[in-house]
Image (cartoon, rainbow, N blue to C red; front, side, top):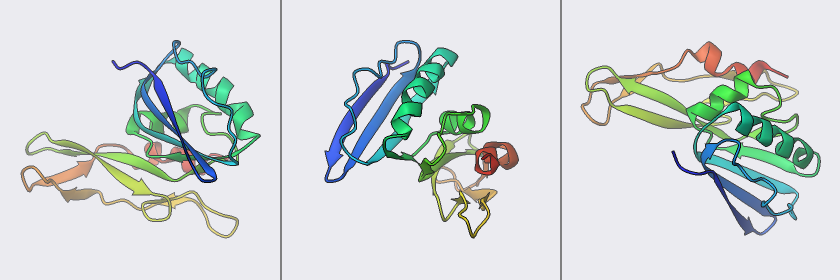
Length: 165
């Protein structure tokens, strides 16, 4: 289990925070820079998981930050997407979800693969004019054996976060 770490990268008017490791009670959000940009991207791709104390620290950090800046979550792995649907406050009101990973599994060879889905193509957070929803391929070709990979989630549960407001 890798230690929790955050790397900050400023590019023009956008601050990107790249999170990695395991979000637990040792997570140190106080060490993060105060956002100088109005747009902050939270790249969650390398987060390996979390425990309840880490999630509490996350919510205590993200709630006040979300009142100062426009947050965008990007590349959320399956472990984090599950938290989006379970834990109120994980994504504050007004935050955008740019992309998430959806796990697929090949029954033939046992290959597992997380496939990136972008807001607007694989899922839709909705707008004032449109409803939220998702459109995923139940199956996709396995790049290991050529067999058929299936989505390794129950879509109704996995995408529940889209319908919570």
